Length: 625
Image 1: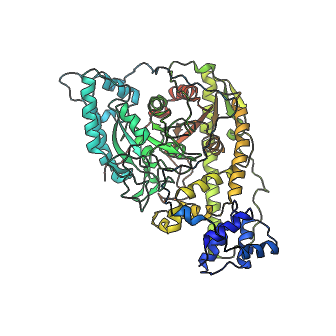
Image 2: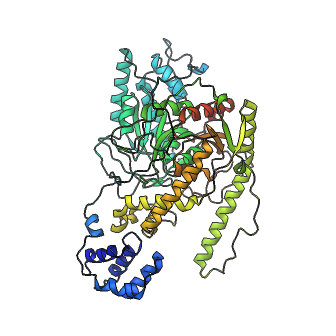
Image 3: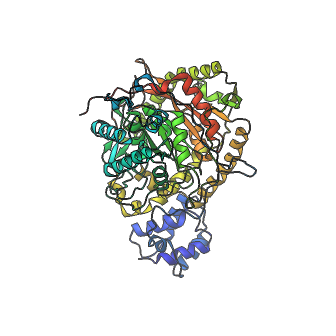
């Protein structure tokens, strides 16, 4: 076999090390069991890499393959773990950008307890703790603080609900019962002694199973990692421990943070258990919506909080990139990963964010920004925009569909038909959902919001997502090269195994070019936010890709339930992402904020939520199976 080190040095000396060509060429030689590189191999690899090479250079490459050098194999032998980040750090903060850095005391809303909670804590009465399953964090915090409900009672109630509904919803990877009961016991003792830690003290929560917890497996939802143990607590876990919160379960995620299909099955939507809950924060959204945890922590790289929050009718917060440390969390894309809360109300998200944000001295991407929640902030002073074009119907373009040659195989025709059905279903759902978006704009104007039309700049954003796929492929490179990717449950064209394989064909130069284009987009989007504190947007629009690339925060709210006349999904397979929407399922609305402007963003979103009350609707869960 060829000496790869020599080969790579030759490519490097010719200025080709930063392109796709060396990797492709080496793979060709390895696949063919060649003892030497041929000119034909170079020509094939150069065509894939789009790098023109003259015959003279090809001869030069062949003559110099025996030069000594280090190459890919030396790096492979390091067996770099997922927890090691690249030397390069993505920074969303542009020159001259300012944000608040002084941390101030939390200012919560005044406690308002519903009448059904009035008898909790009264002597001689046995309260129905199930009545608290869908209570907000603010309500639960007040009941626990005033000793009308114990942390242990809440913990047992939520553990029982997790066990009761998991067989149907499939949202639990591991129950952390021993840890939870110990934490609840400690919380009750501290509160009885007057040592109240704050609004999360004694409240049970669930962690997406990409967060490491000592003594419990961290599976990443993926086949081949079912028994993985990471003997550390993620920073977010440590901070919630310090806040006195009680971890009751590690919840599902689609394998390696994609979708809702994990090694144990498909996590379901509590509103329609024939649907998946979407992903990748599948378990956190499903369990929160089903009243099986008080709150949860999810993560988003490109929609993994937004999508399941929409599907399950939760309130999800995707914080600014670099606000919450990701130490101890599985890495997918170092330049795009974000951790955030999935809750039942906006203020719940604020209370959780207050506990988990800020530098930890380990995640170098975290900024010294402050989040200062003030429930009494005058939201009417905020400058509010809305993405006018995204709320309007899109005219049909007769020239939009390119003329295709006849399919060459039945398989190709089937793929085309499937894509057509997918587009038609998405179009029908978007058309139906427009009335919810229109009603939201009307309600905001009725509330006194002065909506100004806004537009996000036009760039080839989808092409920039190559950065995500390249980083993800690097994060799980050993999985691809070893062939262990076949252990992942989902193996379709858009699933990670195929994406990782394809990403190895992204040239390093094109990755850098995508990063440069991304910087141009960041500058342009920043100019838009110079004029606005909050921008209202449809959830299912290009803003999702744009703001994940630029690092801006978003809060996703339930925005009503679809009626019986809603278009039915084109598939009834729970594992098919086309199986979305339909009668009786939640619609959503998204609010976007300035970088590290979460306090203003959440204040405005809370005003809308309080005015509509959609978050008070809960799914009617089927009996335990």
